[in-house]
Figure 1 (cartoon, rainbow, N blue to C red):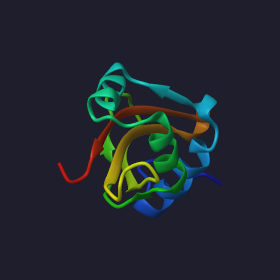
Figure 2 (cartoon, helix red, strand yellow):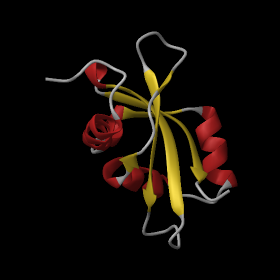
Figure 3 (cartoon, rainbow, N blue to C red):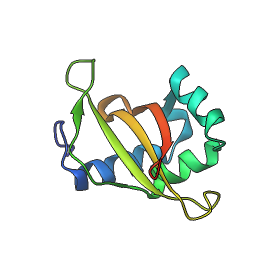
Figure 4 (cartoon, rainbow, N blue to C red):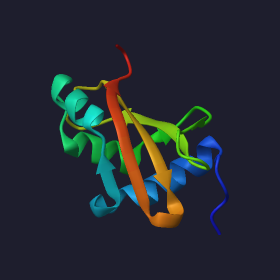
Length: 107
């Protein structure tokens, strides 16, 4: 059974990883697309973070009622040992994740 949001970092890590396994479950904001290009990252990096990353911080309310933003991060095979963070708004009930932005953690 899925817990209601906001999730603990451990639960968020588990649910986001599960949803991230299916690229059809993802939608990307225009802001994300701009930042992906600006930071010279690849969609593959983002998918790797969603499938293998960790949520370390508590959720922040999203603008849509009953949804929350989570920061998930890890190093990716293409990141030259740099930590990549992806901000997402997951909706487990709809099997969907909105990818809000992507960034280098060390910048």
